Image (cartoon, rainbow, N blue to C red; front, side, top):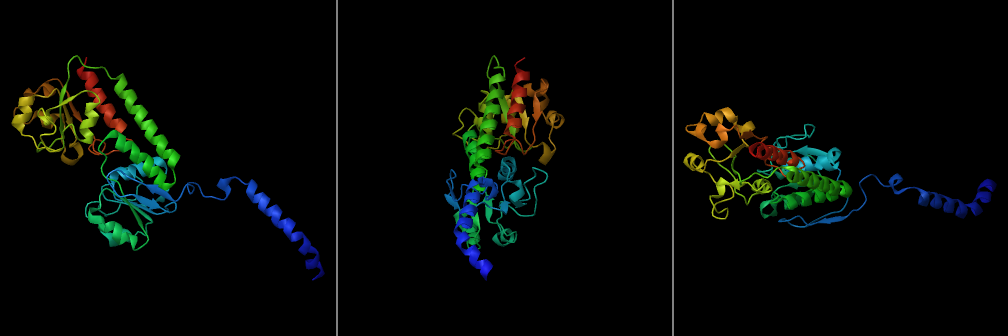
Length: 312
């Protein structure tokens, strides 16, 4: 007891010293990396606003594009499950979950604190998961390059990597602008046909994909003179394509449907097309040509290569 009585007068000084020591420590010593900045309110374009109270530690991604961006901003270690269509990156924990047929029970089984989806009709998934304390972030398909960059930044903020998200958007934008700037301009506008599948479904210039081609001033035969007159993903006829005789053909059905320059040339009458005769049929990676991710740079580079070769 005498020893304790001697220490009692020193307790205020000891506490002050401890507090001073804590104050001198850098924030990273007390706060886990990426945990600062919460709660954060997010307002994705075309979807409900959502508030994330704290850094998510268990993320389920049911959007292939979101999956790629999550890993690109550094949130990969927080991802515990992705949908069956999320094929990139290779280390993503793929499951049989579907981003189209949403199953709240199957999703909740992964014990997520954040779920990212492309759509949630009537908010049914959001409502069901909210009962388990899980936040749902809806990120609709990007409709423009600007919208894609915004989603890079938003996913960075949602996961505790705001600086990384902003940097990813900046770097992707800069690389794409550089590619477009350094691509030679053809003497006359070039026409193109973008194929989604062998039944001749295509895209108009209004779509995200069509806007990428628009960076190079290419003329889309699927617009048929007016991109507002058709659906965003019209089905063309073989006769229409042969009549339009595009300068360039881009195949976004190489993985799904095994299409290539040889199969295109073998189609009735297609061997007479300008693009086929001049070797301007360009196979694309189906995923890269359809997702709004940092790999957009690869898609833009492929289009640049085609325009450069056609301009010689």
